[in-house]
Image (cartoon, rainbow, N blue to C red; front, side, top):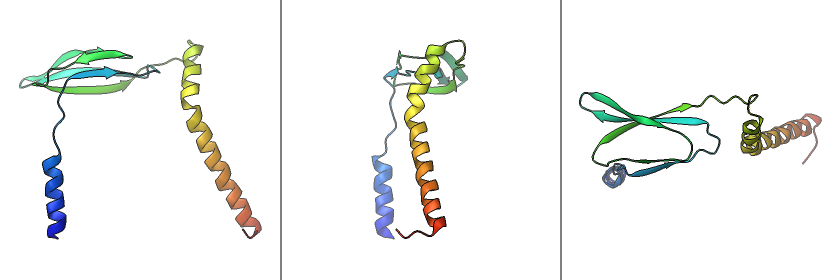
Length: 116
């Protein structure tokens, strides 16, 4: 038990807080909008909205709150944006299709009683 407690204590001692600095926002699909607030004693102060390829320089002496919300993307009004989304998610779609084919194939082999 002491071994686990000493390991846990070591982990807590090694964990440090992150400090603010230069943050580069890179979102090739422009799918998200980042809103930054400066947290003060009286509440929050709005800093700004940031999207694709913005650079944000924050003072590490202050606390910040960053919220992320999806951007509205109309794939029908901008077909090139739709092509970019399709290219970005095509590997995931093909991976799920491959896993589905393997599962169905193994089920059919099992169902027919074939010996592997």
